[in-house]
Image 1: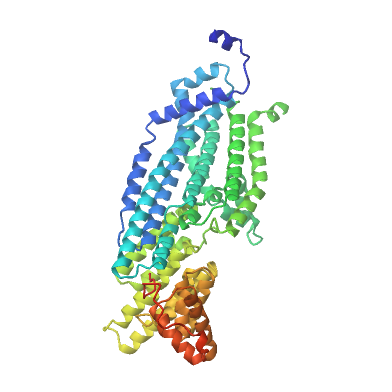
Image 2: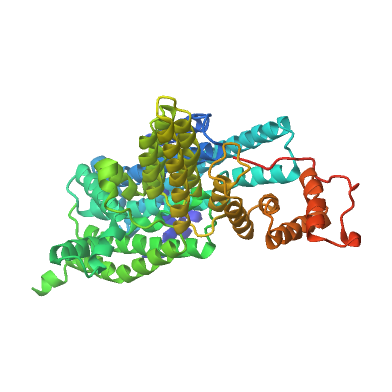
Amino acid sequence: MSTATSASAPHRNFSPARIWALATSTVTQLLRMKILVFLAVFSLIVVATGFAFPTMSPEQQLKLLKDVSLGALQLFSIVIAIAATALLLPRDLEDRTLYTILSKPVPRYEYLIGKLLGVILLLAGGLLVMDIIFSGVVWLKQNLIISSQIAALRAEQNDTPENIAAITAITSQYGLSWSLHAGVFSIFLKSAVIAALSLLISCFASSTLFTIVVSLGFTIAGHGQQLMRDWFLSSLSGFWEKSISLVLTLICPDLGLFDLVEAAIRGDIIPLNVLANVTGIALLYIIGYTAVAHLFFVDKEL
Amino acid sequence: MNRALRSPRLLGVLLFLMMGIVKLPLENHLSHSLRDQKLIPNPPALSLRDSLGQMGFAATLGGLRSLVASITYLQAYVAFERVEWGKVDSLMTLTTLLQPLEPSYWDEASWHMAYNAASNYLNDEKIRAALRQKLFRDHVQRGINILNEGLKFLPNHPRLLIKLGDIYNTESPARRSPDGRKAAEYYLAAHANGAQGFYERIAAYELAKFEDRPSQQQAYDILKRYYDQDTFNPTMRRLLPELEEKLQIPAIQRIDPQRPFSQPGRRTLRR
């Protein structure tokens, strides 16, 4: 009965269900490639940093823990975004999975969107797990520090409510806060943009290595985009400086926009409208790069 | 020709460039807005490239500026343990340049100079006495300069104002550069910008030491307010009657000398 229903159903040019099926199979494919070994390495770094440097001031201990953990998280997410995306198309070609999929009535853009969504899902899941581990260690460290500081105040007979409140406020500002999750979200946005860019490059690249190297180059240039834009817009810069910075400004995404991590580490509040703006620009990049990737992929001889 | 123009690849290149033109003003607007809100840092100064080396500079560009600052901070900590004050100063300067919006780095940089380096030079018997005094004063001044530099990036930040107050505080155990009036001024500014109440009380204790009537009146007004709010401690029990006497407060308005303390603590919170 159900077979008859599905057979009679008209074929749709755009099917979220097909894209979802492609995305989940991509996640499975990436998990089989043992890409989540990174998670274990990250956890080790966080736990080790959490209990290192006990002689430093409490806030510096917390700051260092957050600096190292968020730095590692950022590096890992960028590496996963580039490596996982660069491997997808060549692996599908090698396994001939690509021919099996495209021989069905699956448009090429659905294939690309499904693959990108798979990488983004993997990044989101990985970052969520890493955020939970990281938050747990920061929370534990923060409570240990507050307890030891209150004990020290008590020993000095200085444990007035005012002093305890002050010490708790100072330590909490450098401890776990909602801003930290906003910082992790900005890392996710950045890695999703890098994944979309890598997908675009892999659509015309001749090898996986080429995709990885060029994506890495774009990632580094994207982080220096504000510097280049300043040169381009500055009246003091010369012709060549202006020309080179203009080209790089046009072709590279401004990845510095997603560097909300520093504010998150300081414990500053990251307003929701800022997160919405940054999410909006990330979507612009992702949709734009995927559209360009499709134009390259649709013409590609497989 | 027409066929070439209809090529999806060419369309892709054109769309890519079009996207670049559209995104440029958006990126520029958003990055300036985020910089104004102090949520993202300004691009690193090119002068940092020499101090950090190519790798360090690339890492700061790659969104890892906070991590690089932590590394230079740790290097400064190692130099502090080795009592290399020049190195501590240059590495902490680098750290504050990398993260000028982080108050703890300004605080620690000034603390190393105004307290650790200054005291170390003062007690170093290998140096001639006259030179020791000079090095002590120079390093205290260096600590003050660091905090004033930090206040340019973080105007009226209570933490930096408190530290300036501490350096000028005559009650400081190491007797930095005693100037009670300046100490009171910075503590009051810190309190006005969100610091805890005890900094306002320390300012009042400092002002109470002066013989001029406006200072005494200001000290009295602050301490009486805390007394009325039932935040009463031994220092206030000693100072308030003295001020009442000097200011000739009518007997009916004077405090009750038998009133019990509401706060067990005697000392203020330090680092």
